[in-house]
Length: 175
Ligand SMILES: Cc1cc2nc3c(=O)[nH]c(=O)nc-3n(C[C@H](O)[C@H](O)[C@H](O)COP(=O)(O)O)c2cc1C
Image (cartoon, rainbow, N blue to C red; front, side):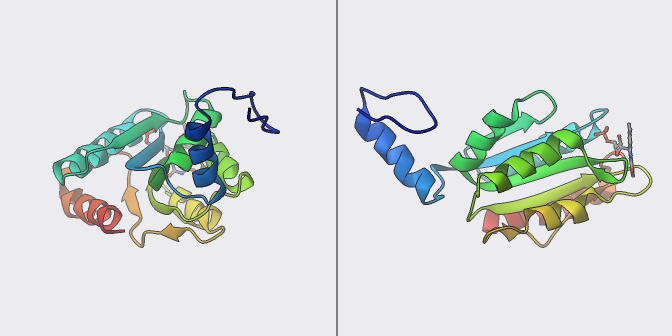
């Protein structure tokens, strides 16, 4: 029987849970899924997240999980962050800050001491996109790696940004 401090008592499948605890305690990802989390006010950041996911899939990435931070409880996002090694975060700029649901997600990861993750960040802003710089600062905890390329969207992605999206996606795939 396993009686964890923060959870239900497990009486069956003990090996399955020991494996989970072993990975979580070492902050080792559970599989090779790329996690995409986005926060969007009017849908353009969501659209960019869909484009990034499509490009990743076209490049051969098999497992991709994507969540809208505005409608997903942070506990689900956090458990996905423990499962996945590479995490792409896209956020609208909101009153010169990271959009609140995305901010909460980042705070949760930090509070739970998540480690050894690769992050890529994309920001959207209509007049002054500042979410990217702030997310980079917020994600600089433990020994996370943050991809060099920040994808900047001015309201909506457009055709002329195809190369920027490719560069963004390639860096995620190569890390
Ligand atoms: C309340 C509110 C505050 C915003 N604050 C900013 C801001 O500080 N800087 C900026 O460039 N855009 C700001 N925006 C614009 C959003 O970033 C904009 O919705 C986004 O760039 C478009 O993406 P979306 O369709 O995913 O919302 C704001 C929008 C709203 C509704």
